Length: 260
Image 1 (cartoon, rainbow, N blue to C red):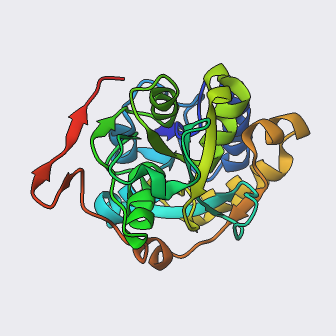
Image 2: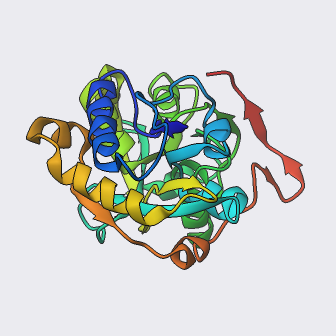
C-alpha cells in the first residue's frame, strides 16, 4: 500500500510529516493490512493519487474535482487554522517584488508564474479572482512548484505569482529570497487540500485515525505542520468551486514553459 503526503513536504518539514504518518499508522492498525512503514517520496503525485493501493494521500481541490472525482474517495480536510478562513478552508496570496506596485490592478498583462495548470491555489483560484476584477495575466511561466514560482518573481523572471497561503508561510520561514517579496492581494476562500484514499477503501476509519493522529502530535510537530485538526467538507463543496480555462486563453497561446 502507498501513503503519500507530498503537498507540504519539504526538507524542513519531512521529519514532522514522518511523525504524522507514524501516528496515523499506529491509529490504523487492525483496520488495514500491509500498511506501509514510511511515506512514499519516490512517486509522481499523479501516480500516487491514482494508485489502486493508495491507503492515504493528500491532493489539491482542482485535481479532485477535474480529474480524480469518481476515481478516489474523499476522506477529510486538514484544518491549518488560516486567519480569515473557516476551518478546513484556505486562500492564495499574490506576491510581487517589494515596491512593484500598490495592488493587483498594476499587474494586468504582466508575466505570471504558476506552479501547475491544475493547481487551485496557483492557477484556478487566482485566475477566477483576476477575471472577476477584469484582469488577466500576460506571459505565463510554469514552474512546477509554489517555491519555484515565488523564486521566479524574486529573481525577476516573472512579475507576480499566486501562492498557497501555507506554502507562503513556509517560504517566508525557510527561503531567504522571500525577503524580496511582498503580498499585493489575496483570493477568496476555498476548501483546503483534502486527504483521499483509493476506491474500495473505507474512508471512515481513515478519518478517525487522522483525527486521532493529529490530536496526538507533540506541540513542535503540530506547529511545524501548522495542523489544528480535521474537518469533513462535503465533496459537493469541492465540486462547486469554479474552474477557469487552462493556460491557453481565448485561442491565443501565451504560455511559456520553464523547467524547474
